[in-house]
Image (cartoon, rainbow, N blue to C red; front, top):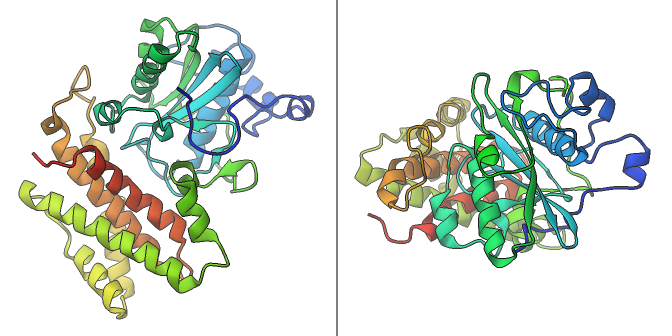
Length: 354
């Protein structure tokens, strides 16, 4: 099984980048060394293998880069896993929300794969670890899943971001992963004022990770703008309808502004600044992150009822995100469709509502 999404192969960059003194994530090794991370694999960690390994250092750098890029979304954490395979080394990443949710503005290095984008990953696995709050547990389980098909695949190094006072990498230690480290969010080597990496030839847009064909269509300048807009709108309307339908039987209170803006966009009528501000507040105070499985549960459950409330709020949050993105003068249709695709993914994993 390949830890695949889309884009180039997952081998860690070597050669020119290394000789230039730049890590695979674009963070200079000197920055990491000054924090005590690059040289030893220790320093900011709560739990660490305390081993010196370049692959671990690269994983730490990428974990902190992803955390920095998603810093506007507190509660979203990341795990980076480095696998040794027959062809060399592969890197996989996963967040701890939904199906490895990637927030807007986070562009994935082509040298990494997004765990939930692996086409060989079973629906059962995806449902079991959907939104699991500890991303390292998901990565370790993924490694076990891959090893069933290829016993030569080894999860060699793991780095995971965590809030102060917590630990994410304990599952890696228990599983016997040789190199692992927590990355304390308050001790990032990345300067808070450093701009997040932009989308360029070395990175993928979040929609291109999960649906390269949809991304190509929505960004193809030869496709009429009205056609691209129509595709994004149909996806938005469908996602909002799904989210509202899921909220109703659970008696989840839905802010009126969601229906107001949906109706206005459908009718092409003006939307006031106050309405957009109200929707932004709904988005800011989304509840799904506080309901993710794993805060209380010790192990993921196959019982869909255990995640029913979380999934309903997850769909609402992603639907609100999609609606919010229509405010721009030139909406990013690819970003909109990615948000709606998260709702579609949940619906595909649980086609029968309980």
